[in-house]
Image 1 (cartoon, rainbow, N blue to C red):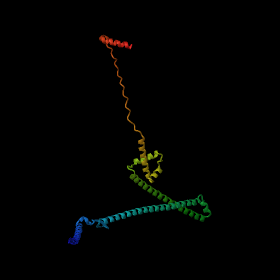
Image 2: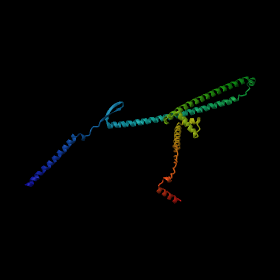
Image 3: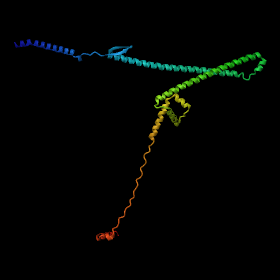
Image 4: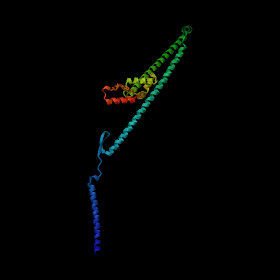
Length: 290
């Protein structure tokens, strides 16, 4: 009977245990549902400007868009820099090409002037009067040719002079631009640059054996970085000279004066004033010394 009762009570206890477990899980689910920390919080929005309009979106997406925008801006900037450098190189190449063409044209015109001068040289010392007497029509025709040749020579010489003037003017403008760029460079790269400092550097360059003349000035204008080198070298030499020069120390103190003090001779006692014992003692001492 007891065994039957125990066997009858066992299913009820298992059912009760399962029901208790379900209640515990349900309570845990309710706790998790009620706990705000256990739920995923929605991401905060951020406003960014796209195409001139402000748009709100999650911060993570906004950060990705900003990073992409920065990459695009950096790429655009680098592309523009490369394009500017390429444009500058092409402009310089075109300038070199034009200068080469102008030089060739100048050489041709100079050669033309020389050729015309050689042709005119053939008429030098020609006796026009004698030719007119012998063949007036031929002399007149030849004189017309001579005048035309002189006209062509003068025009060619004038063209060469014009080219020389343009070349000199272009050189002056290029030199003025180089001087301006060189001045801007030294003002930017050498702190405290003044005309006085330029004079000091010229003196330093001369002291180390550099010939400071117009050629040196052109070299500096074309390569202003050399001034930075001379400035650093002159300052370094001054520092080394200052470190190797021993400073003069204070003068040695005068020798102490030796004071000579007179030693007073011990006065001998008057025998008349001595007692008998003292006189006898003194007398014995004198005998021992003898």
